[in-house]
Length: 124
Image 1 (cartoon, rainbow, N blue to C red):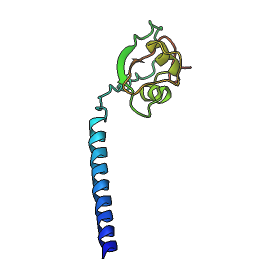
Image 2 (tube, helix red, strand yellow):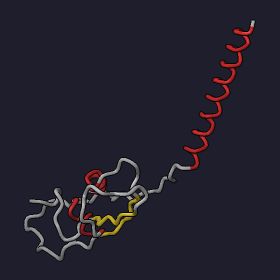
Image 3 (cartoon, rainbow, N blue to C red):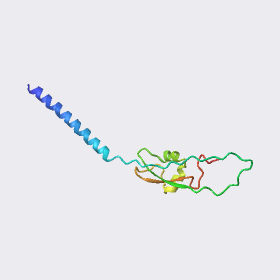
Image 4 (cartoon, rainbow, N blue to C red):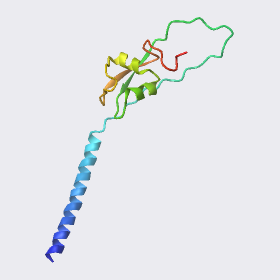
């Protein structure tokens, strides 16, 4: 009879320990999940129909600055693709020297429209 009682208490202890551990992990996850921040997505450009004579080139467009808060899993490359800017523009706008170093929660300035260097979609 002593063995049955011991097994009962061991099973009860395991169930209570697992429940307490899962509860603590759930509370920890809720308390340490960064809030999602809305990001500005550039609107698609309106393309004018082709004309007989091309318009003379004007001054380069002024970049529109947008802020992106780095989330877990973000890389400069994925952020550049998301906003259609080059990695070099992102690094120049934020004064970064190492493209492999980002911190979660770090605010990055996104130079939508370019920062002086053409993006892949603007190349001839």
